[in-house]
Amino acid sequence: MNEAIFHQPLLAFACAAIGYLLGNIQTAIIISKSFYHDDVRNHGSGNAGSTNMIRVFGLKPGAITFAGDFLKSVASILVGRFLFGSLGGYIAGFMTVLGHCYPAFVHFRGGKGVASSIGLAFMVNPLGAAFSVAIGAIVFSITKRVSVASLLSILLFFISVLILKGADIALVVTTGLIVMLVYIRHIENIRRLIRGEEAKLIPKAKD
Image 1 (cartoon, rainbow, N blue to C red):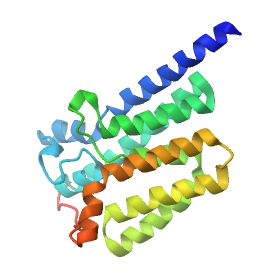
Image 2 (cartoon, helix red, strand yellow; image 1 turned 90 degrees about the vertical axis):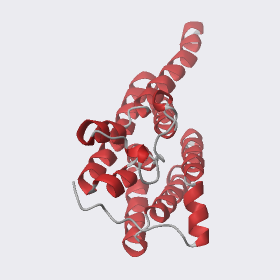
Image 3 (cartoon, helix red, strand yellow; image 1 turned 30 degrees about the vertical axis):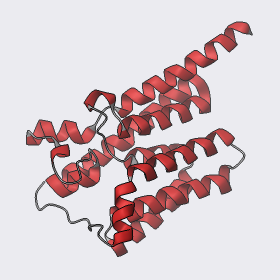
Image 4 (spheres, one colour; image 1 turned 180 degrees about the vertical axis):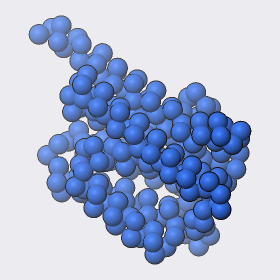
């Protein structure tokens, strides 16, 4: 019993460390440097995310970036669950989003955490994730503003967790922290939305 208690914080730390390291894998930076010999963070919004990749390099590299950032959350949660059960998955998943937003290995200049958060969402509450993403897609089709769709989707997902999985306090806390993190990363977008200056997404005409 004592040995099991001793190992619990070590396993939790291992999940956190693995999740954060996976979050540091910046798909946008890898693709932009490998195929375009440039760093996407030097252009557009300065973020290493799929939206900025679409604006700067086109739809295809943006889609690949989204997939990479989505899948690293999936991978981290699977590893976390293997090591420490559902709680390990939550820890690893959150740390992946945190690592994506603030990656130590690339000077803490990452993305805004949306794709990684969606990956986590589908792993922990697929029904709520599907509903939230569908509503976000509809909102984007109307507004053409990724920030509006992203902020609404992540908030709706949190509400879906409260409704469908409210008894899982660890999940409620995890998703609540992710909402806070994503909104913090979108502070400038929110300010532009308030001023009516937020740009619509217009993909660059190349891939």
